[in-house]
Length: 95
Image: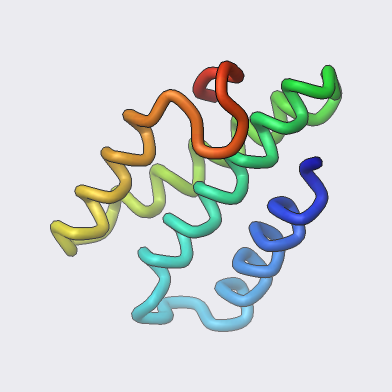
């Protein structure tokens, strides 16, 4: 199911939009990327062909934003997230 991960990703997006420049932004982009990737994997597994391409794009955008961080830990986690073959449903691949 992709509804819960998408709600969480959208919540993080809304929270950051209300607080531009928040110091926790890089972490929230990582969180958002993780939840979008979980939603992507679920949408792909359930053949939601209208949804998974959008989630793949949003995942890449969130991960890209996290990579703008100067915090080496954030960068390390972003690289680890991208290297994982899955985060939610095995066998669905990366966006």
